[in-house]
Amino acid sequence: MIHDVGAIAKKCGLGGILSGRRTTPAVREKLEAEFDAIRKNDVEVLDFSRIEIVDFSAADEIVAKLAGRMEQGEYGPGTILLSGCNEAVREGLEVALKQKDLCLMHVDGKKKWSLVGELNPYLKETLDLCMRDGTLLARDLSAELKLKLNTASTRLINLFAKHLVLRKEDQENKIGREYTYCSPLSALP
Image (cartoon, rainbow, N blue to C red; front, side):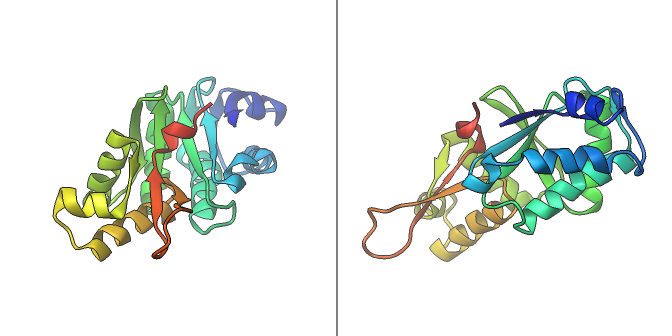
């Protein structure tokens, strides 16, 4: 589901500049109340295209708290994506997410993406492969990067724990559990 952060801010009596900690919790609370897709292993898109600036305090109060709660599993297995961030918005979000060692994906359409926040280089390498191919299995990652299977599996589990990929269990596999890790871009409306 796509959430127009500008429209939500307007409902909260705010304009296109999100600033401070006093007024911005209302925006986060309205977003959380609308979250439904994330609980179903799907995506919630926060569209900032009608927001001009987000300062550090507002970014921390809205986006960093949402990302932290998502990573703790409060919202389910899906993910939160960002879109429509101009340079000023992105800068505020970047600082707030990095400070808490969090990371979200910014999307521009169904093909172009970038990261906002902090991600370990080895996880970024793994994410790049998943995003390139759209899906990734541990055995394929193991073969491509010449990793032990358990190392490849751990990398994918870590990306899933950070909610940067979606995961589907292979129901056909009779030997044990096998998951397909998917680009969240594939779930965009």
